[in-house]
Image (tube, rainbow, N blue to C red; front, side, top):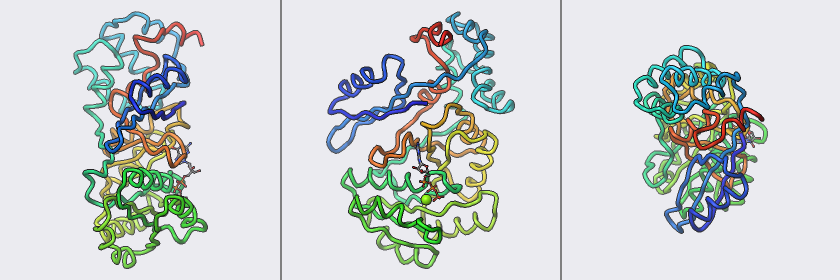
Length: 328
Ligand SMILES: Nc1nc2c(ncn2[C@@H]2O[C@H](COP(=O)(O)OP(=O)(O)OP(=O)(O)O)[C@@H](O)[C@H]2O)c(=O)[nH]1
Ligand SMILES: [Mg+2]
């Protein structure tokens, strides 16, 4: 999926940039206005085509669809994204409850019923955010993005890492905190982290990066739970998009079991099939906080909601000539 961020002094300027650079097919994933200086951010996506069987595109041309055709179409879409059968059925049952002819909006309503969304907001966040996940999931980049965002918003930032055993673990984050002119606290264990509680309380935003863990190793997971308790931190899972759906759901469930209620989805830009993140949100019962669409720290994280997720899942919509898509 090609995803990009645009910033401009006004929303219409930002939208004009989206149209000029990505064309009329761009899907608006999220918009945000900076509370401090009014800068407008737009995240937009262009789907790389998920190829569906020909008859699905034929069905799509028959708008509005009858309920059976809509159900069949959405079943094909979800299957194409790699959502397993039982979760596809669960979503379709929710779709059946929606009084709506447009398939994208039907799916958005069903996603809204089955998944939760809870973006990170330092204005209301009281607990430190402890970023946890499997090795290589994107925890450090996410920590740096959150720190940069808070810093640019004029917040006092506390940032720490517990990842001091792995070669380069500290250096990677320190390279970013140096640029942002922040001190990086190294807190590899419960005792060292507990000593930071005053510094955490004094900050407006507190972020703690951790070492990658095996979600299915009880010892690793209990150690994380204890570390989070030492800082009274909220565990935030970082989950890379694009992995196998049931594997992603199992991972989310494992982190939910130690208290994670939200997740940041990383590497959305490197992914065409979204069954993994949908399964993690539906079956893993972890809310989607934000998404990461590139490795550039200054670009920050983006927001996503049921409608934009549905738009990313469904190929084409009423405004888009399906014939063109099908012909590609
Ligand atoms: N394209 C893309 N790359 C990303 C994104 N987020 C992270 N990456 C890349 O993914 C790789 C791993 O990211 P890290 O932040 O180091 O992952 P980590 O979870 O901290 O890894 P460990 O500390 O080794 O467990 C790096 O090469 C990042 O640049 C993203 O949203 N998009
Ligand atoms: Mg890391």
